[in-house]
Length: 300
Image 1: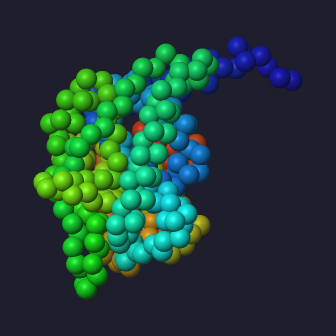
Image 2 (image 1 turned 180 degrees about the horizontal axis):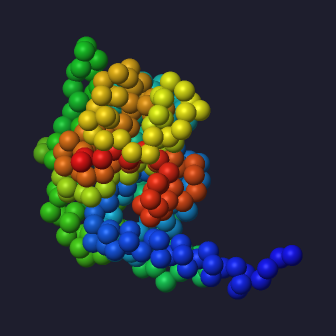
C-alpha cells in the first residue's frame, strides 16, 4: 500500500532537519573555497552544483568559487589543430594554448554567471539573489624552466588580494576566480585550478577548501580501486601517505589533489576535502552530514 506523502514525510524530514541544524549553526559566517574541475562542467553538472552552492550561501556561508578548464582548453586546441603538451601533470602553455585558455575561461564564466542567475519556481534557486563578482584578484609569476622543461606561459600564484575578496564576500557576493593571473607588468599566465584554490584558501585562512573532482576521494588502500573511501585523514597521516605515493601525472592519480589538501592544511586551513562530482549533492552531503562522502584532511 502506498502511504500518502503527508503521512510519511514528517517522519523522515523532521529528524533529518534537526540533525542538520548543528552544522548550519557551526558554518554560518564561515569562509569556504570551492574548486570545481572543468570535467564536472563538461559532464553537465554545473546547474545542480550551483543550486547546492546557493543553498550554502543562503545558510550564511561566504563562498569563493574557483573553476577549472582542462578539458575545455584541450577541446579548443583540438579545434585549432594544435598539439597540447603536459609535463608531470602541468600544461605547457605556448601562445596558442594561452589564447585557447582565455577563450575557454570567458565561455565558462558566462555559463557560471548564467547558472547563478536562474530563479525558476519550484527549484532550489527560487527567490535566490546571488551576485557573482570576479576580477584581477591574483598576481602571478611564471613557472619558468624546471628540470630542463620550459613551461612558457604557465604560471603560479604569487599573491592573492585577500582584503578585496573579503570585501566582496562581506557584501553578499560569491567571488568567482578563473585560473588566470597577471604579472605586475600585465603579462597573462595560465594557472591551475588547484593552485588558485589552495593559494586563495591559505590567503583567506578559509575554514574549508573543497575540491569537486573526477575522483571519489582517497581510498583506504590506494592500490585497490574497490577499497572504501577514507573519510578522514589527519594531516600527519596524509603526509605519510603522500610520501609513499608516486608523483602524480594527472588528476586521476591519488596524489594529485591530496598534495594540495596537505599544502592548504599546512598553511592554516582547518579542513580540506576531495569530493566526487559524479555523486549528486556531494557538496551538501560533505558539509551537512557527519560522515560526508569524500576524503577530508584535518589540520588538527
